[in-house]
Figure 1 (cartoon, rainbow over the protein chains, first blue to last red):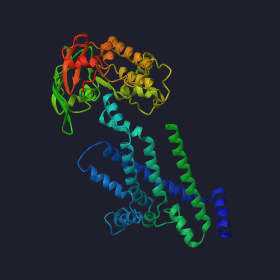
Figure 2 (tube, each protein chain N blue to C red):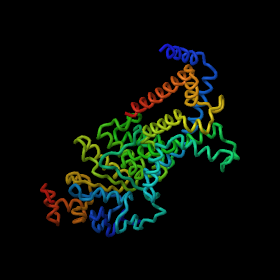
Figure 3 (tube, rainbow over the protein chains, first blue to last red):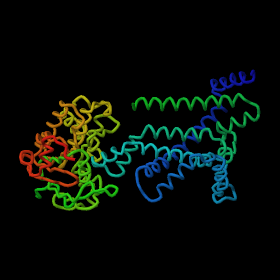
Figure 4 (cartoon, rainbow over the protein chains, first blue to last red):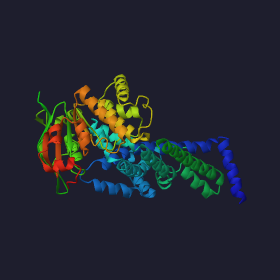
Length: 230
Length: 243
């Protein structure tokens, strides 16, 4: 029990003394996962809106694929990205393996189906009369879609948060394609695994606290936005 | 100029093999209030959605200004008319943004939008409601916002689908006055779907009685209400069930 308390004490010291190594890991994690969620939302939200609001052949297949990819194993994604980016792979000449770009790519692939599938549910949840009303008021197809997305904004924000939660905590892909290189690709999840393995719980606990704090802040923000909507 | 804002020829609509509207031939005069009357569930709302180009007919044609719809003119035509739904459908934003919506999608400048929205809200009696959340309003206020949102566009044709069916007598009176005002001030052709004979009598210049998917009588509103040719209309006027 003592070593847990000592670990917690050291964790708070690292956080409050602004320990450079710890904060490098935190900021790198936020940068990589933030960029991945941004890219995934650029792909996932339009995809969700397209599938949710328009009827076309293959719509059901895309929905099934999105839902299947919802639970995509992170190590499998990491493995495929690794195979593509390794020096024998088709994209090996780009030299992206063990770089933040490789991790962003993997995390984008993981987050896109989550954001896409939840955006689909979000736009389908909007009263169909909203669409008819927008068209009746003279909106074009694009303007109508944007109106529906705006109506579903809180649910779409929840989709972004779910996507962010998925990628910032994942470890499989980050470890395989990032390599857990200190100062370059070491993020919170891989650092926690490494430090725990070494028996150094202080940094692991500090990073764990930060992860929890981020989750809390994001959810508190979502709760506030939902209250505003009500 | 063609005297008819809208004319239909054998307009029909099926849902799941069931004929909801059967070969309707309607002539809606420009600048008049035309009531589509009939019991609930007879297809009045469907007819309005077809005329507003929100749904496709199964067969038949709709002529606007004597011309059939051309697909490349759909948006242009759609922007000359609008529909106020039975249950007011307001966007989850402020009253101002709701009323400004149609103007924004048409690319109007900010100053012009502000002036028009302000005037429209004054006309519907919601002058100080600009910043209120639209979804927090009462039923009557919501319907007035929906009417302001339509009115601000100065449409040539305004479709009203049972606009007062869920409202109290005070709001019914306000909305009826608004309908008359819009028709009088802007010469807007108004197509009013209602099951309320008394309301149709108060507002309409022309009337068409829809029953079992067919127009059973159409013409001057006063004549239809005072001396209908069809016995089913007489029974409906007398308040007797005609199903």
